[in-house]
Length: 315
Image (cartoon, rainbow, N blue to C red; front, side):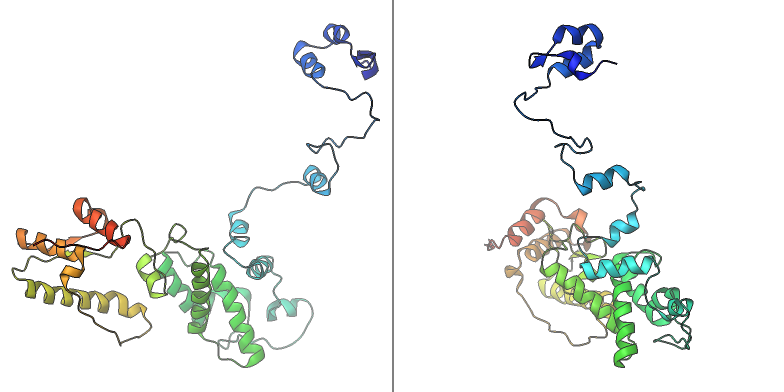
C-alpha cells in the first residue's frame, strides 16, 4: 500500500499513477477530491459530515441502538407536557416513590392505598383499584380502547390525585381524575394541538367534553327524513326522536345533567332540514341518513352552511 504522497505531484494528483494502481471507480472518486495546497493539515473527524468533532456524533458512533419502542414514542409525545412525559418514564422504570418501592429500599412503615384499604402498589393504584377502574372504563368508552392500552393522562392524574389525598387530605375521587384529564384535553384542543385528525375516539362523546370537530360535511349520529304527511306532525316527530336520542345517548354521558334548553327554529332557517322535509313529503317515507349517505344536493347545502352562506328559500 503506497502512501498518499506517492499519488501527489507538484500540488495536484498524479492521475497516471492513480489509474495504474487503483481500480477505475475509486480512481475517479479520488481525482474529484480537491486539495487546498495553501492550507495546513487538519485532523478530520470521519463520523461527522463536516469533519468536525461533536459529542452527538461521537455518541451515535459508540452507542448500541435498540429497536424503536412504540411505548416510549407514546411517552415522549408532543401532545404531553414534559412534566407528564418525565413522570411516565419514571413510572415505567419503576422509579415512582410509592409505599411498595420505599419499603424495598429499607424503609419500614405500614402501607395503605389512598382510595381503599389495600396495600399501595403500582399495579393496584394505577390499574386494579375500584376508583381507577371507573376512570379507565369512562375513557375506554370514549376513545374505543381496551383497558390494557396505555393511558398516559390517566396515569398522570391518578398520581396527582393520590398525592393530593395523601398530603393535603383531599378525598380520592374518580370524578376528580376524569375532570383533570378532560381539562388537559380541552387545553390541547384550545391550543389546536389536538384536532379531529388526531382524535381516534367517538366524536359525539368528545362533544360532551366541549370539543366540536367539524368535517368538510359535519358528521352527525343520524339525520331523519320523516315522511309523516304534514309539516306539524313531522316537527313533532323530529322533537320526539331528538329527545329519545338525548335520553339514550347524550344524557348518560353528561354526568347526570337533567336541565336543558329547547329552542324552536323554523325549517326555512335550516336549509338542510328544509331539504329533508321536502324529500320526505314527496316520498312519504321515513329514512335515517348516516354520514356516508349524505351526497348530492344535501352535501352541497351542508358545505355552504359550514361556510356561513345564507340560505335563500324558494317556494
